[in-house]
Image (cartoon, rainbow, N blue to C red; front, side, top):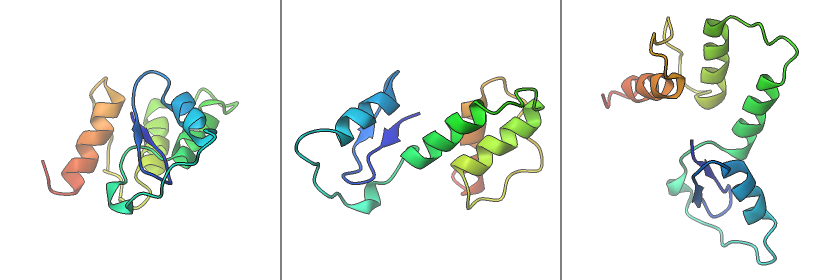
Length: 105
């Protein structure tokens, strides 16, 4: 998933999005303040929260519980569905539910 600068709202994609964002933040010249209407992707705070959850000592969490944890991080203002998607692709499933909850699908 892409991550986005909280200042200029530039999106970073690829295999090392978090690293790209850190490099961007550390640039000698700060980026310009962007229009917040461009917000998309995962914020740095959400990324950190997901990484923290992934390092938890209790790695034996049931997959359904893990799915709902990820949902709450990515979509804190949306009511989760009653059951998670049965698809093997977790990100696709989360996206499908989020878009469906907005009435787009």
